[in-house]
Image 1 (cartoon, one colour):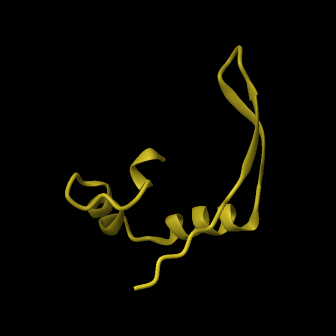
Image 2: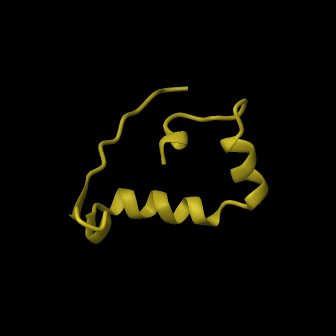
Length: 61
């Protein structure tokens, strides 16, 4: 399996007083990734987030 690397970027405007994101600007790759996560069945997400099934940087989300 060939490995490929894709850079994604996201700009956030954060209210530091309240610690809330006010505005987010993201590339199409970021939006596609987040929408694909929402399409996964709950059982798959639970399996991926378990200690044995952790894939890549998914645990940092």
